Image 1 (tube, rainbow, N blue to C red):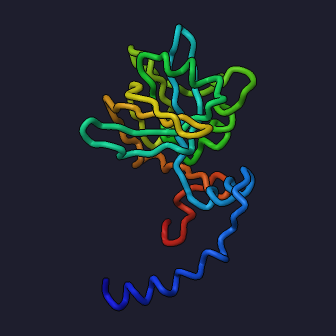
Image 2 (image 1 turned 45 degrees about the vertical axis):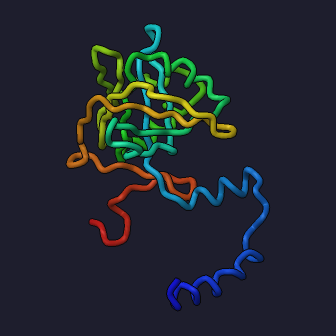
Length: 185
């Protein structure tokens, strides 16, 4: 260990008293909201019905061989047990014009796809027009993770729309776009 590393370690050892030990759901949601994340719509046709949900826990680059992405879904989700039966699941990384679309797809009431511009594959993956990226996937595996399930999805195809549509991000409980980030135009 270098002298600098030893000095840094000594300076950080007293931080324990500054950490909030209240790990209530409200405290954790507030803390986790400080990490900006992309917003993904996952949709497909299962048993002849369009199913879809929105995830801000979506992660790319889990693995390159095989090509895997992931997201976390609440164990109480009523949609995921139906959606995971789809032959293919389309992932649309939502674009900056999708704020209302996101709320519509996340709704527990009504037809989540009413009035939306969507495309689908022969295998039943559903994609949203105006998305920054499309990924054609299948369920690879599911892993228990507390009150959520981590879902690994294998990618079979991609289509990049980012030159036309900037993605939105979810940060501090609000949708934001990347164009307004400092230093961007």
